[in-house]
Image (cartoon, rainbow, N blue to C red):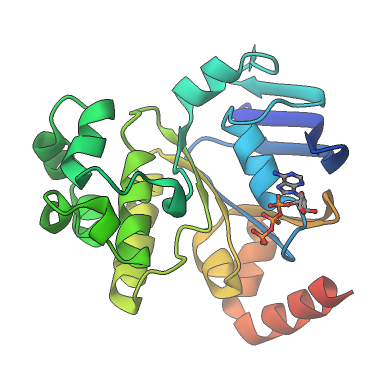
Length: 239
Ligand SMILES: Nc1ncnc2c1ncn2[C@@H]1O[C@H](COP(=O)(O)OP(=O)(O)OP(=O)(O)O)[C@@H](O)[C@H]1O
């Protein structure tokens, strides 16, 4: 197996006065879709935000392609695409104006997104005010922002939230195609079927710690018997 693309070693992250994530170690390979599951409040968002450079690590190390970027949040933010929370997008801008801050030409960017842009229905939204967007439309814009840094590594926190069934289906397939082309994708997920069908690695968090690592083999087995995987995983999450 090749060297990991992204490695976290004994990472902890503080929220307020307490550690919301503690002693996390993970290795994620290039062209892998890595899924993180866990109960509400288990630390998924905190871990993803820190990895993407939006929060500092309290302890531990983070390396990207063998470069230690633990203390370099700017490097993490520049080299890892990240979707902002959809409800933080500015109401007073049109989608085109927002994209214009981070990409030279929103129309070209939208075209270049290919099937991903199609899944997000981005071209139909460019002239819409963000304040007039539904929750699902905001989510589509937020997801597009993660791909404006052309880095090959993207972190998405529960990307399918608020999306309708068609958009969910199309986005899942567009992301899978991107991963097959070399994208490294890390997502928090609540849907166990997506975890089993799309991911080749994963972890379950509870109270800020990893309580289960899921290998490619585990997830391939899970995909062959989704009912059994769901029943076992729900039982594990319940306790
Ligand atoms: N800004 C904050 N200040 C203080 N504590 C916070 C803050 N944000 C989150 N927390 C706490 O950190 C812990 C982990 O929260 P986090 O949002 O990472 O969980 P999560 O697994 O992403 O949850 P969900 O599935 O509900 O999105 C929780 O105990 C939460 O209350």
